[in-house]
Image 1 (cartoon, one colour):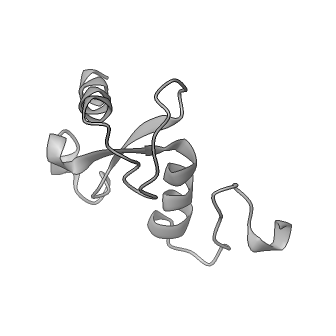
Image 2 (tube, rainbow, N blue to C red; image 1 turned 60 degrees about the vertical axis):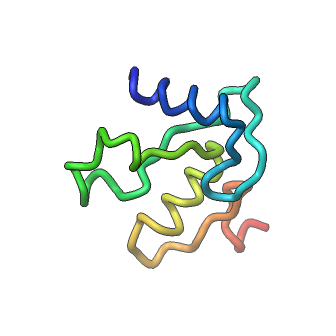
Length: 87
């Protein structure tokens, strides 16, 4: 938990944008999550490396998971959390 707080503090102090969509992060909400650049399941040795952690919007984190990390035939999910079939 401390490492995540450290990462958030650095990104907030440096006013960095979302690592996924490059848009501004609203730090007044709980909308920012810390994510691993390289998946911790595939690279467990990097799980606690500061250089492998980024901050992104919660919605971007969900989209990244569904579109990049989950390797199956299910439809991709948009920023709104919906698939094309639901739009």
